[in-house]
Amino acid sequence: MTNTSMDISEQLKWLGWILGFMLIVEIVNLLTGRMLSAFGVIPRTPSSLGFIFTAPFIHGSVTHFASNMVTLAVFTALVFQFGRVRFVQVSLLLITLTGLLVWVFGRSAIHIGASGVIYGYFGYLVLAGMLSRKVTLTLISIFVAIFYGTMIFGVLPSSPYISWESHLFGFLSGLIVAYFMRDKAKSTIV
Image (cartoon, rainbow, N blue to C red; front, side, top):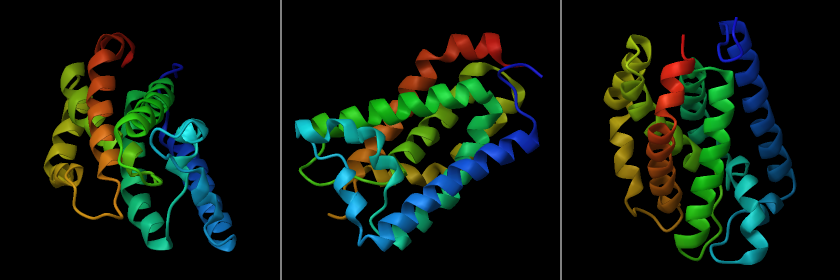
């Protein structure tokens, strides 16, 4: 097994750790009266710039948390198909780029939740498989586009309590990451 590939048991272990960590953060946030929400991104506020790395792990309610976890689990499992190293690279780039774009261009609010990363994975998965020219990865792109394509409407303003900016900038970040990592993907995927 190469450094970039993962067997199913390793994928499930990583997925369990990620979702378990998210659940622990949610429980702590719930038990503290949502005090962790203070670690969200507040656009153009210098003191919140570092929170671009904490905001994706914090949710505003149990409903918010639950609504993100299923799609996060599916997309995480699909990004794992590009390999462990690629998963880590993509995740870190998406968290950073999405967070920075929300910090610079987002409306004045506290932006929290995993949906920016989810939309980043969505953009990445739709484009990266096509660019890889690998049959399995291309099929993943087609699957995501068909079964999750309506997510694209989430990049539009719909509710004052939903960070459509995180959705939009996450999706764009996913496309950017897929495009700029395309040559590496061709040479490292088996």
